[in-house]
Image (cartoon, rainbow, N blue to C red; front, side):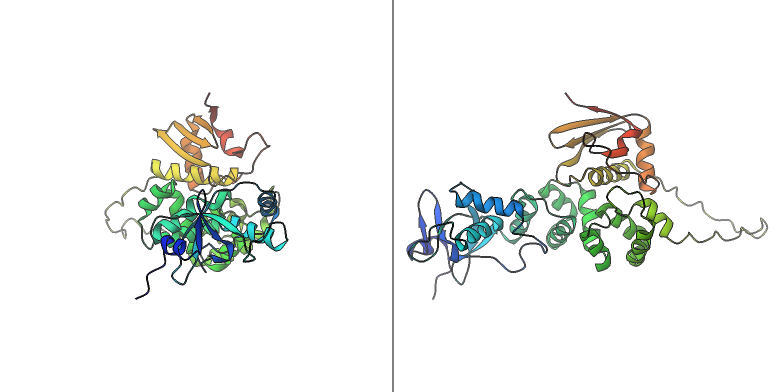
Length: 340
């Protein structure tokens, strides 16, 4: 019976060797089909810079890998590094060994299939995932984990995970518009939530109403003009014809709804998907946001009003105003103070 592939077996048969850490030849490191989210772009300026760094003898973290049953290893984290090493080798910028390859530092990834997908969400090798890529990863994780578990393990809010999962299940035309940058993920999800299968058509119609948007993207105001008017309310019956009815339960907006709307709008306005989160909230008057390494405290009685307007789709101007205020007009409606 053939023994399953392992690091020990590969060291014994000379496929892998030990130096200061495990090393394996580049041609024995394989990319697993379908593992990385669709649309990951290599060969851009940032990747070329990484290639040159490696070609110049610069250090880099070991690639995280797992044994491959057919031999060699599957790469779990480090796809950009592997690609950069291959490019440097192909261009003759790295010396080849006796096998025409190069030895690469690797480390054993410890975890199961869920942990491997989580590694994509939490690593990305310093490169942010696009909203569509995030949506794909969260949808994949939802096969094994609850929304609460995904949020906890990825250090994101449940509102963010829920929003991305809705984007993952949106029709292809909506996703393509998000990929193309024609509409933000936040606005696309809002339209899907309100208009369902008709969201793609409405977003296409809204493109004709985009005028003064700073980045040319579809705004809530453009969608409002493109969306069909709400159906007219039925004529009220005469008092004598009205049937007594049980009063419907009052539908109110909760603090959780307000937090989710504010978080999504601020994230979209600042274009910092991975660096903004709501840290805590005291009642309805104070909201603490983490932007990069800075805490921003929002105070004022208008905070609740701003959140309610966002939820109702009435707050339409979320464009960034200048380089110093990355959160745009949202903060103009309330007093904002930075922590010391």
